[in-house]
Image (cartoon, rainbow over all chains, first blue to last red; front, side):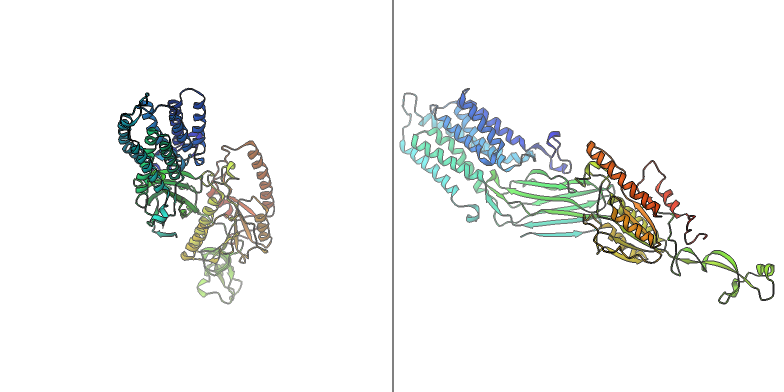
Length: 182
Length: 452
C-alpha cells in the first residue's frame, strides 16, 4: 500500500476494500476524545483522555483502549448515578470502545478493509445496545438513588446478586481457553 | 500440517493448501473480561448501579462472541488458480475455505515478488477474489504469494498466520524469427542445409575440375571437356558444393539480471525494474536456438551459473524442445562463475555468448574461445537504460559502469569477437539488419559457404 497516495491495491479489484486500516484507529481516537469530553468536560482530565486515546490508537497492543474504558468508568464515579443522556452515551461509548479497540488490535493499520468486515460487529453492537439501553433506563429509574438519597426500589440484595452474576460470567470467560474447551 | 498441490493444465494452473489453524485467544478478550470484572466489583463495593450497567454490554458482548468462536479442529484452505491469457496478463482467482465461525480474514499478499500488501476481507463473504497481473517478464517467477490469518467474532479467537501459498509459473519467452543465420568459420558434418567449401553433393555449382578417381561419370561436362581437353585422357567434371550443418553453442551468462530502470538496479523489484537483461537473454537464446535447429543445425546450450543446465549439441525438434525448456527456467544465480576451465566448445562451433557484459568474466571466456579459433558472437542483452525516479548518484554510477562496459566491448571487438546488440533501440539498425550483416562473409575469413 502506498499511504502517501492512498492508493487502493489494484491487483484485487473484486475485494472492494476501500477503507484504510488506519481509519479504525482514527475512529478510536475520535470516540475516545468525544467520550472524555462528555464524561469529564473541558478540564485537565480531558487532556489525559486525549493522551490515552492517542496512545490507544498508536499502540493498540499496549491495551490503552481498555485503559481508556477504565478511565471513563472512573469518570462516571464523579457523577450522580441517575438517568441522563451523558450516561446513556457513555454506556454505548464504552461498548463501542471495546469493539473498536479489538478491531484496532487485530487489523493492520496499513491494510485496506472491506466495508462488510464492519457489518457483523456493528450488528452485534446494535443487538446488544438496544436492550441494554432500555434496561439501563428502567434500572436507573427504579434502582438509582435520588439526590436526596431516596431509592425508588431499594433492594440491596438485587444489586449484590446482579454484580456477583456479572463477575461470575466474566470469570467464566477468563477460565478455559478455546483450546481446552473443544 | 500443511499440504500443497499443483495441478497444471495448458492454460491454467491451480495451487492449493489446507491446514488446521492454530488458534489463540485474543488479548482483547482478556482485557474486556478483566475490565468487566473490575467494573462489576467496583459496582458491588461502591453500590453503584451505573457501573454495573456499564459492565453489562461488555459481558454480553464477550459471551456472545465466545459462543460463536470458530471450530478448533476444522481445516482452513486457500486456492489460487492462474490463467494465462493472450493479452500478456495472468488472471488469478483466490478462494478461501474458512472454518465455521471465522468472521474476518486478514490477507497479506505480494504480486511478482513486489511489496506485500494487506487486505482485510469478511470471512463468510470472501468468495472468489480475482484479479490480473501484468506479464512483465519471462522465466520462472512468483506470480502471487498469499499469507492469511483468521479472526473470530470480535477477535475472540485468532489463528496464527497460515503457511504462505505461493503460485509460481514459468513464462516462455517469445522467440523472434531470424531469417539470416551467421555461420561458423568451418562447417562440419556430411549433411545439412548450408553449403560448405568441400566438393560434394547437394549444393550449387562449385567449379570445373579434372576428372579424378571417385568422380561419377554423369558429372562429366562434355562441352568443357571438348573445349579444354588437350588429349583424349582429359575429362572435366562439374563439381558441386557439399552440404553441411553448423554447430552452435549458446552460452548464457545468467549471473545478473538488471532491468532497464537504473533506479531499480540495487533493489531489483520484478514489478518495477522493467524489461530485464535476462528477459532479453531468454528471448535471444530461444530465437537463436529455434533459428538454427529449424535450419537443420546442431545447437548446444550452457548456462554459466549452473552445471546442471548444460545441454550437448544436437539437432531435431525434440532437442529444440529441451533447449527451450532449459532456456525458460534460467534465472539469476548471483553466484560467481565457478568453473576452473571454460566450458568445452565443440570443434568448429560458433559460440554465442549472451551477456550484459557488466563484468570481466564473460569477456575472458569470449576471448579464450576466440583465441582457440572459434567464431564468437557476443550478444549484448543489456536493455536500453531508463532513468525514471533515479537519483543523480545513481545516474553517475550508471555512467561509470557503462564506461567500463564500453571498454570491454572495445577489447572484444579488437580481438575479433563480433558484437550483436539484441535490444532494439532507435539509434541503430533494426536487429534483423544487424544479424544480416553478421551473416555476410567477411574479408578476413569468409564463412564456410562463401569464397575463401
